[in-house]
Amino acid sequence: MFLATWKYFSYYTILTNLLVFIWISVQVFYPHSNFALFALDHNVSAAVTFYILTVGLANYLLYGWQVLTLPNRIYDLLVHAVTPILTFCYWFFYLSKIQLTYEYIPYWLIYPLTYAVYTTVHGNWTKFYPYDFTNIDVLGAKKVALNAFSLSVGVLLGASAFVFVSKNIG
Image 1 (cartoon, one colour):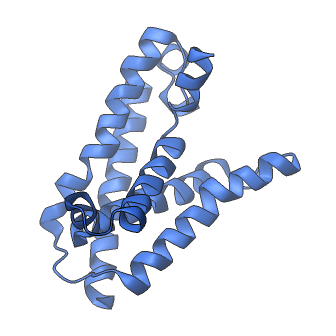
Image 2: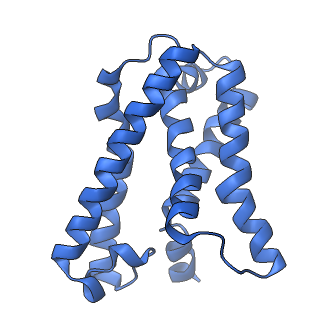
């Protein structure tokens, strides 16, 4: 049971959806707390929105529209489409986009890079890699490093584009 739970929470998709859930829950249930003020900070709210958008975009860009059973399709749509779209709409229509600058982007990279390190260490120890492109045992360290570099560049460019668009709609 523990191993299955650990594997389930090894996916970036799950962790990021959980992050969005916590981010929204704090705003709803503890709106006047310091944590809610932190969650509503323009940089934090933009970063969380960016993370969940990358979940949806990466899923459909990397894996396309997969053939799934109805329950799995519903789950897939909830975590890869509905949550990203609703989060983006909430951020777009209700939260501040002013004051976002490119200098925040290195801070935005902490979460995905920490996840990448965790996945590598976790996978090496348990031999479970949540995503095929992270499997060092099959692909080798050089290919996984190239995949990580490519994803990092993609995240960096995506974050830059996100800030650019935010500054022009804010």
